[in-house]
Length: 361
Image (cartoon, rainbow, N blue to C red; front, side, top):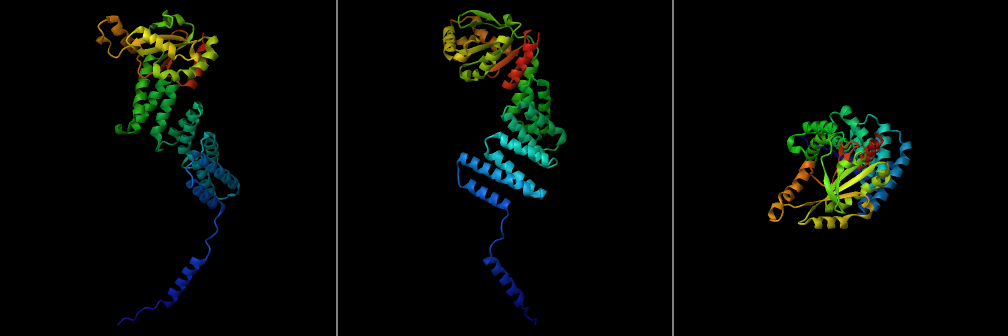
């Protein structure tokens, strides 16, 4: 019969090694590991966003102190990634992330995560209303990284920025690339709505402004065509949009003496004209009293009232159809020749466009 095998010496040796491992102290941690572990532990002990931000800023400062002492490129990259994660998730000041990301891209220009950081930097620049910087970063991504996983979202952001710069044809090209990059089931409502707005804006750009003759608060009729040789910002709004008007007051104060007029047309659903006028007078803030305020009474079902004439029935429909009003508030920037320059421009680009149009003869 086969003899039993004896493993006395290996077994005893293995047992001794295991016991030594149990009673010996763990290997010492390096500075990077201590910072990482202590930061994670501190973040897990609180639910206060202010405390999170303080902890993240402290950890970022410690990491930055450690970076010059690190020689390994791999470890240096790990430290940078931790800094960027903390800045992105916990720091409310976008500048912190932007500064650290710029330094990371300078030291690791060929890193595989480069397009992702470019995309995030563009978002933060947009948050700070630095649209030119955001556009420059986004435009780098498609030609350099054609296989970037978030490329459809990059095209959508490029389309939005182009739309708000009144570059409607360019926005439509980016949207076409977005729709080609994704199956129809993944097309967002935002992209579909933006495509509709681009098509609408392309039809209106450089066209003469339609006729608009409405009453002001003193029941005097005003024709918008009489405002030629003035740059006009035309705003259609309703009661719930009153706070959306206030940001335009600074533009009026700055550029009115140079030739800017703001015409605000108030659309109100009411049974009688006096109700619309009285409602408008109550909604106007002191900051925007100097504007030209016109009003239009509307009714969801005007044909239900037996005393209204055919003119009363069709006037509200003509106004919305004539200007293609979709979502209020809606703005039209009109040049000195009475032609539409742009629709729904963002505040930054609106300011630039007004400056440009005021210099034209």
